[in-house]
Each structure stands twice: as C-alpha cells, then as structure tokens.
Image (cartoon, rainbow, N blue to C red):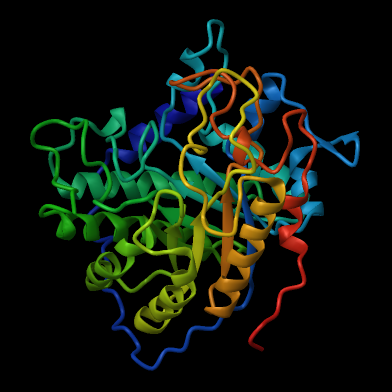
Length: 397
C-alpha cells in the first residue's frame, strides 16, 4: 500500500507541465583534460533483495554473510541498482506476491545496505516499468497517453527530482546517476499512444531525446545542489561499436554529463575483440573528453547450471585464452581491468555477480539464468573471481 501511494504521488507530479526549466548547456571546452579521480570496482546487485527473500543464501569463507558485506570486503566500492517506474509485474509473477522489486522502496533498501558497507551507489533510471535495453524501451504505463514533448520532459524531470529528493532526504543520495539504460536507439520507444513523442534516435528522435535528457540532468543537478553528495551523471550504450556515433550525437544535445558508460559482453559484442578494447577505450576518452566506465560486463565460469532456468551464457566459443573455468573467469576480469586502467578508464561494473539460484522468479523462469556467470558456486560460496577487485594492478601514474 505504501508503495502504491508513493508511486501515485510520483505519477501526479510527473505529468504536470512546468515551462522555463530548460537551461542552455555550456559550450564544450576543447582543452578539457580527462582526470580520473577514482577507479570504480562495481557490482550490479539489483536482484539481491529478491534472491534473499526467496531462499538464496551466501557464504564467504564458510560463513553465511550479507552479499552487500561480501562485496565490500572483497573490494567493491560501487553498487549499481536499476530503478523501474512501477514494476507491478515483479509482484504478479508470484502466486501470493506482496511487494515490488526494483521500485523506489526496494532501491531505497539496497542503497541503505550498500552505503552502510561503505560503497558508493550508482542509480540506474530505466524510465520504464520493465527492462530497458537495446531491444526494448517501453514507455511507463503512467505516461502512455502523453502526446506533447514538453509534458514528457516535465514528467521525466518531476519523476527524477521526486526520486532523488526522497533519497536525499534520507541521506541516501547516489554518487552517480545513469540516465537511461543501454539507450542505443533512445528511450521510451514503444508502448505509448500513436502520437507519443518520437524518442527513437535511430529514426528521427534526437531532438526529443535531447529535450528529455536535459530535463533529467536538470533534476539531478538541482537535487545535488542541496545535497552533501556531488552526484555524477552517466549515459549508457551497449557494445563499444556504438559509442562514437551515439556520443557524437548526444554531445550536440548536451555536454552536461560526466561519464560515457558502455556494456561490453565479449561473447555477444564481437565487433570489438577483447585485445582491441584497450585502444578503443583510450580513443573514446581522447575524442570526447569524458570519463569512460564499463557499466556492464560478465564472463561464465562453467557451462553447467544449478536449476532448470536456461543460462544466457555457455553456448558461445570462449574468448581465446579464457576457458569457462573459475580460473578463466578470474583471469578474464583481471586482464579486462588492467586493460581499462591502461586506457585511462574510470571503472568496471560486473552485471549481477550475485544472481545465484533460488526460488526467485522473473517473466522467463524460476532460479537464475546467470548462476554460471556469478562469483559464487552453486552452493552460494564465494569463488576466487570475486577477488579481481583487490588484484595488484599496474597504473600509468
């Protein structure tokens, strides 16, 4: 009931108009030098609360422990969480479901537990009720009837502002905010009415995309001005082959962001080979004058599974030199991280390294489609791969 009341308030706020909030972006500074102040070792732990609620158990050195504590003690200094607008389906997949997951209240709990362990937080706004990725970007149900770009921009502004103000009032302001998730062709591309503003940047939606993201940026900055946390802003595309064209266009819309975020799953993203990544990342930094962070990556340690939920990874040919073993996964993450450090990147975030099998459900199955890519064995014990974050890397300092 509390969740429904709060989301109803967000909907009412999100659909009002408020002209005059659109500012003018500063001109880019051609002489700007990218300075990496901190290297982030990140873990996307968005499923953890749901796993714990449905029988998942984690062990470290033979002792049962909180996964938030485990990751912090093994070197993670950033926890990433996705936020869906009103994900009622996360309750409906359970016969007697009583709560939502990856909504604001669930994220609030995750942020609290992460900051309690000393980790920074990255909040990933999907601006959808469901998964947002290159293949799907659904309009939140609350916004489906919008037909005017100004109303959509103000809805995004007000929703973003309300979420961050709520968190900031509880001393839970995230250190980084991601505006959209894997927005290769834009945000909110489908599910709206026939007159919904065009948001597909692979078609003709860049102007509208610019208006909407600047509204989100403004909301982040205005809340940050009242906070003790200097929140940074990231945009995120999947596959390094999409970085150059996408950020060339985004920089025509706004320069007011801090990080270029990239998903790189080498078993899927074969346009840039693993040995080519370092040079490509270095080139992105020099070309765009922004910090670069790998926001998603993963690699399997086995082709076996612990449940009947088919795994997403395992049928592909391994990257040369990195077999599907715990050692292969560990070496992959160490070598990937060293390449990023060599290239001057600012961090690496592993996607769902704690998604072990349990009675957790989503739309496609019960358990995990990722347990063979987690940092835990099939009994929930940590494996050596989690310690890539404490490896003694060389630096260019």
